[in-house]
Image 1 (tube, rainbow, N blue to C red):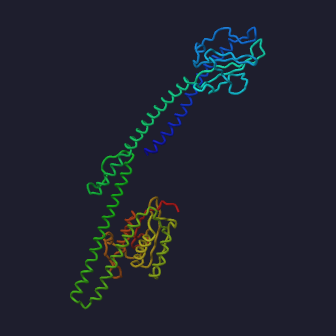
Image 2: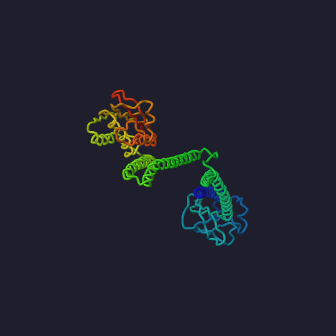
Image 3: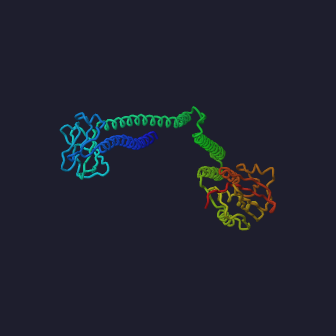
Length: 438
C-alpha cells in the first residue's frame, strides 16, 4: 500500500511539476520577449531616412547597454545596398539572420552565432517613409539572464516538489501503518489464543475492523461448538458400545452356550449405535455447505415408493407445495423423511398423510397416521435414544432421535402432536427454507 501510494504521488507530482515548469518558463520567456519587442518598437519609432538615404535616429535609445561593448544587449539595422548600422555594443561583430525572410510582424528566435553567448533575437522588416528599401531591424539580448531565471525557478520547483513528495509519502506511510495497526493487534490476539493465553479477541477495535473481529469470534464459537459436539458424541458412542461389549466379554469369559447368539444380538446393537452416530457426524460435516439445498417433493416421492414396497397394506398420500426447497442435503432429507414415514406406516393403522407447507423462512412437513398416537406425557421422552413405547414390533428406538439430531444440526426442529384428521400421531418437521434461487 505504501509503495502504491508513493508511486502514485511521484507520478502526480512529476506531471504537476512538468506542467508548472512549462507555465513558469513560458511566463519568464514571455516577459523577456516583451522587453525585446519594446526595444524593437522604440528603434522603429525613432528611425528615419537621412539626406543620403541612410538610416538615422531622431532621438537616442534609452538603453545604456547598447553603448557598452559586449554588454549582452545589441541592435542592428540592415538594408539592401547599404552597410549594416549596428549598436556600439556589437563592436566588431555582426548579427546574422537565421535564414532569408521578411517579417512584417515581429519574429523571435534563438541564435548561437556568438560561440560563448547564446542570443534571443527579435526581428522585423519595415519600409520607412521616403524610402523604397525594406529595412531589417534586429534587437538581440544574451540568454544568460533568462537561463539563470529559468534554472532558479526549476531549482525551486524540484526542491519544493521533492520536499512535498517526501512529506506526502511519509504521511501515506503513517496513515497506512496507523490504519493497519489493529491487524497487528488481531495477529497478536490470535497468537495468544493459539498459546492458550486467551479464548477470544476481547480488546476494543476500531469500527472498520470490528465486523471482522466479530466474525472471527463467531467462527471460534462455531468451532468450539463443533468440537464439543464431537467430544460429546464420541463419549456417547463409547458409552453405548460399552454395555454390549461387556455382555459379550462376560459371555465369552463364562463360555456361555448361547455365546454365538449373544455376539450376534449385541453386535447388531453396536452396529445400530454406530450407524446413528455416523449419520449425525455426516450431517454435521455437510452443515458447513452454505448452498446445501434439496427439493422436498422428489424426496417424498422416493420415500413413498420405498416405504410402499415394505408396507404394501399402507396407503400413503402426499399433498401441499410441490416447489418447496429446503437448506438441507438431499441424503439427510431422505433419511429424516424416511424415518418419519416408516414409523407412521409401521405404527399406524394403514393410512399415512404427508402435507408440505411453506412460510417465509421455513418449510413444514406434517406426517400424520391413524394409529393409537403417543400420550402427551411420553412425547418428549420418545426422542431419547433407545426408547420404544411399542416393543411388539421390530425397531431400535433410534429413528426419532436421529431425526431430531439431524434437524437441529440444520437449525430445524421436530415435534409430536395429535392428528386432528386421522386421530393418530402427527409429526411436525420444520426445516429452513432455501433462499437460493433455482
